[in-house]
Amino acid sequence: MVDQQQETRLQVVEAPEDCGNAPRKIVIRDFLIALYQQDEDHVLEALAEDIRWELVGSRVLNGLEEVREWLRREPPVRELHIAMVITHGTDCGVDGWVVYADGRTRALSHVLIFAGHAKSAKIKALRSYLIDISG
Image (tube, rainbow, N blue to C red):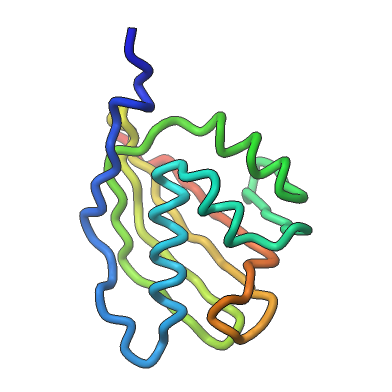
């Protein structure tokens, strides 16, 4: 039997292409693609070691190991739609939705706080609002 996660390939249906004067938008876009592709190495590389990731209404992930464990338990995503990425210094936000391999749809909003202003700065905090909107 083939693992469903191996069969599912993420299709990025909608995402900002042009960074304009905000190159961090591309960093965020690429992070989200890695997140929903379950590219563990890329996701963990983008995060500070002492990351605090609040999954609002669910739990708080503290540190890279808790993120790794959570990521491994997440179901595969078939489609990613990024409606908007907003950056303001180290504080950023993104919203959109995903369609899972089983057909469920979830709206998302992630608030990201970077450790500094450099393009290479790690994400030190995340707050995610994930809302099932399947009918």
